[in-house]
Length: 248
Length: 248
Image 1: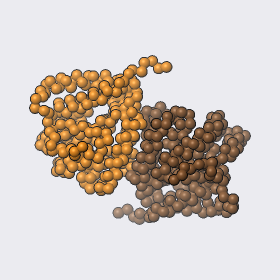
Image 2 (image 1 turned 180 degrees about the horizontal axis):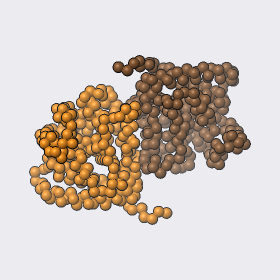
Image 3 (image 1 turned 90 degrees about the horizontal axis):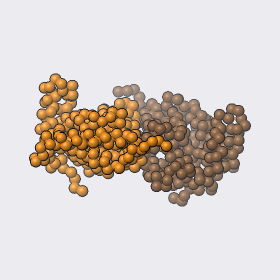
Image 4 (image 1 turned 30 degrees about the horizontal axis):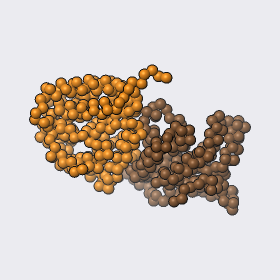
């Protein structure tokens, strides 16, 4: 497969799509997803791991709220990976990640993930090339472990926004009092590393694709939510789940 | 490498060895080990995972007490793996194991381990052949993850006792009031599966040897302790550790 080049992929919805119609469609899918999530929980056989990656302000939080926010919180959990603690740094980089893997019946969202260990760390030269190659192999093994040994379906989404859209959103965080809490001084600095991040992401798509990635055009929230909801629906409805009936 | 056949390996010390001399030698090594463990902890670079496997009454508990019992408990921890809980069964079989992996600077002992997931489970047909093959691959990947990404040295010991010695020890557990607490009705039943266990262990030695096994003749506790202490000393002294000096 040819290497994915992010610059060649649109960050926007196809022109012919009408926002209002797509939003209605998304609402319909989300309602069905809530039913399927209930079934997933009841059956307790499969588990779902949704990995969300993307540049700052690519809209991970909004996606979580709008697509997963109405599901039963007993069956849907979110884990945000922050800078590793001293205890976490005492272990291999997947130790803290494995602990957060979903149990059967659960949907687990990763807001950022183990991919940061080959993204931000490489951009800032905290991880050399040799280590990165080893980590990529370990990530593939790890994702395969979950897939093969816990009936986990892993969905990996890259929220693909343009530099222009990101700049606008970061400015909005500065200007809007309700969004200022999200603003980090570091965000603008990180944004300058865009070309490096793009390259590192492309490496991930290339080297860690045993479980495939979905590139989600994310400049428009309504389209981003539609794509993720649709993908999730496709996967959940394909599991042929059944309510288990009365316990024997 | 030819398949290891446990029946062809002695469960006893070589005839020429004198118990008293070996015991003195072990005491000397154990004293050095305590110093090396302190260094391991101080340096905080490597971690050690000691996996103890063996039939019931093969002397895992005594080994832990006599070889590791005098080390600083702040740097040495033991985890005994029991029948998985409902929560643990909701995850892949390595989920509960990874949580117990040693942090840098630590010695972690596994009293039984993830190998039970391809031993007792196979003996009792709770795990089919196909699953066992997948688990073996996952175990190799997992042990490699620890080795490569946390400077973990993994030492795998199979405590090799004879059926006759086991029968005597189980009888002792029945007869001796101070040992009756260790007796399980299931022990005698499990002992009848000896040939099946032997085959399953031999499979482990063959398929999960990316990190090699040490077969420890274990009918005599003094010799068993000597072999394990010696192996541990060999590994720890080979790490070229240094006290880090004052923090900068």
